[in-house]
Image (cartoon, rainbow, N blue to C red; front, side, top):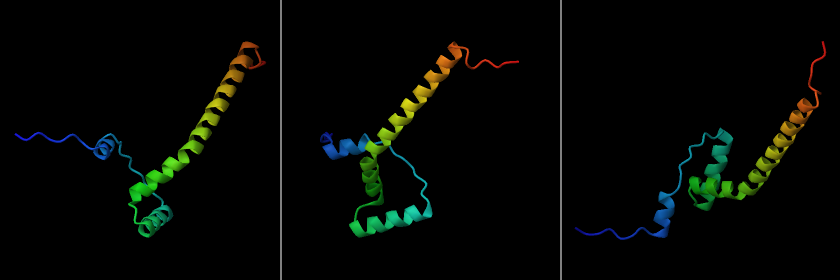
Length: 89
């Protein structure tokens, strides 16, 4: 029996990827088709590259939201410990 050659780096990278299914608005789909046609790059690669380029801004936004959420939660906890949230009857 013949042994299989080890996978190339590209094959290993492809095997380790996770799939993602996207529902696109018609306008986005048309633009993605256009970019793919003009560049000769598959739509999946165009979308992946756009996502990779947008990740730093997305991460920054997520961290900002997380900080804001933590600050609000802390303020609420402090208000409760000082009796500021008690309802007067």
